[in-house]
Length: 494
Ligand code: NAP
Image (cartoon, rainbow, N blue to C red; front, side, top):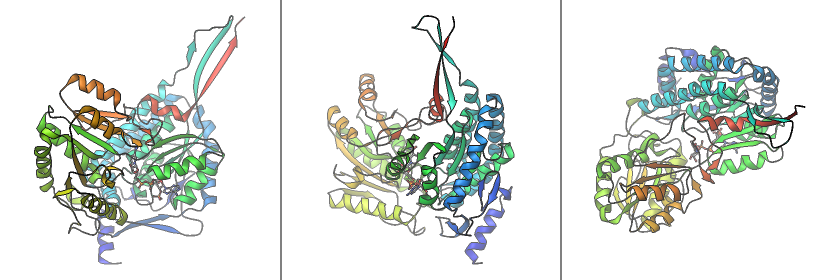
């Protein structure tokens, strides 16, 4: 074993509960390896060291897990909601008890700063707690009849087996946001976590087993996505596909789900505009702009990608923002920096590509630009001013610590520029004018609008985008809807 690998194993052996580190898939209540012995290596983005490996399951093994989830479905769906709620509550308290271990594991495979990882565990657990309560509120409604001698009832029934496909940037929260809603509704689950960060999901499976989910109800299946997810979308037994990830893969899964007409939930990419008018609370708006860009080292679907600042305060705003960026600490997540490593080489190359393209199209480099000495996957937090509307930075999701600014002169102009995107996930607005807040809240073409603040997420809110940012909503009572079918019953009561 190399020195780096030994260090890695040593850091995982510091887990208070080493059984949370699982190098197997979880299927039908068993921890399994790939039938042909294949595996996928997982590396720590901070230093390239090997964290471990997980099975590269074969399609036939995925079909077996789907069969188990399908077989477990009727009994799980028939449980009293209170019983499902009790198991979800037990899962929630096990997650919170294991908070520190889960956060440490996440830093190893994902690289994010440890305090952000702890925050993600709290966020992940909050969905489990929320849906433990919502499980009890899938009420039957009665409709005022328009027909004589008829009684009309509308109920929601669990849809069946749900396939959950999650990304690497929030490896715990994106899974629980889906799984807690699906399980509360009475669905059973087959989940595929990103191959770059599977250990967080496998630790959650270990805790789910301890919480008392029956065999087959919750399965975590690792391996090459085309094979594993392909078997899920091809299966007639899978009724719901809930995906969080890039718009490109979302389109592919949409197509793959068409032949079997599955219900779809899609949480896809973002390209958030951040708009600040001259009447904003200046210092607060600058702080909020920094928060909107650099959380998760910029690898966040809610990350602001385009900063539009009213011309009267533009230069001052860019300067104040850059001053905060210049003092940011960059380093491995374990040292709790402001900016950690990016996920992989292509993410780093994308930052450099967006910076070079913006400069070629006339942008001005204010600070940063280029690779960081902390390691091959670190990029310097960067600020570019006077970015052209045609620059890649203003057209594509950058997903890293590069911020681009441009001035604007009027409401109509900035609204048109902000709305000129297919990825309508979130928009940020800073102004003190109540009329403008009302106009922009209505006219911004995004699923979520943050006014004079950055943090807006949490279990009780309907998270989601419009246009090519996705379909459906996660969180809130709406987050359970896609895991249910509406049943209308009309009874003759003569
Ligand atoms: P990604 O490449 O689309 O991967 C997401 C998931 O899809 C992973 O589990 C991945 O598995 C799987 N996948 C990849 N290729 C596939 C294929 N050919 N067939 C079936 N499945 C496939 O996205 P990512 O890079 O992990 O995540 C970043 C993206 O997620 C960004 O665009 C971000 O905006 C978006 N995101 C959106 C939200 C939201 O709520 N709207 C939240 C977080 C992230 P493997 O890793 O095993 O390949």
